[in-house]
Length: 360
Image 1 (cartoon, rainbow, N blue to C red):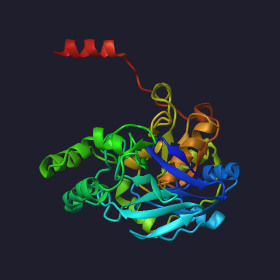
Image 2: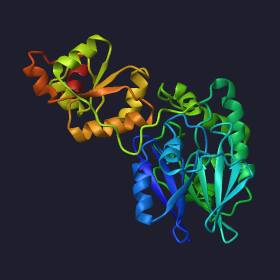
Image 3: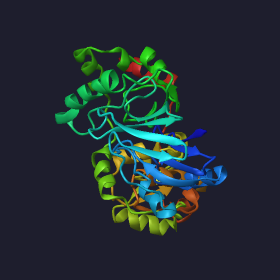
């Protein structure tokens, strides 16, 4: 019997999926992240070999981990063309062309015993939404929106309501058009409740799908990174270099960006002048990818070693490999080196309201 395990990346609003036939000792990963440790640990726990790695589409928000799995465990990363099938133990996977989010988007229909059981939908169907259609530029946005409408109303029409749906993009993903958090739904539930399934007329559908928020600037070149293949990082997170205050100051003079991963209030109390406040309590990758150019050296500061490791992992997931290291000893070390800290005065909401009212 098949099993599905979701591996989440909350800062991206995404999930990848390990599909296994434990009885046959085989499994595959759909839309793997670049840091593959959790897939390897899960495969060991399930006593399976990861034989394949598939992507539903060319990703704009993270580096695909398919090449990492190929290098580490010999996973087959060949494309499954639309309409083609593959077997995994007693499971069959068929690729269905489901354009909309991207021109090449595919969903994977899992069948067991000849019966369709699950759909790995990428961004074609989300919980309460679909993935946006404007990431390839405004010249394709309307065309892809019409393709998304056809995907929902025509290409998926023959699938039964009881099919389990596992979307890659979820609530909180900048690739999405809203929606709910979670890793699983059913096709029938989405047909009844998802506003994009419910909107069948062209103009209302276009209005709904094209009226979207901005997305991080790093999205603009992420698909090119995935086409070319990001450098391999291996099965474990690369070790961060510990930097002295003198090294940090020199690197800043040479153009490095310092990212302080503490929460905002701690940053306000004392921080390295010119550093960015991007707390670990938010999506570090999204904000760094929005504010700092790819390729610019980055130094992590503030917080704990665990915070630095989390930020490092998030940045590697989006292909920001230029992490020069982390300040050793935090703000105390910076101050002890004879350098000043900058501060921001903070006020509570009530005082702010009084200031605004008195200014009027």
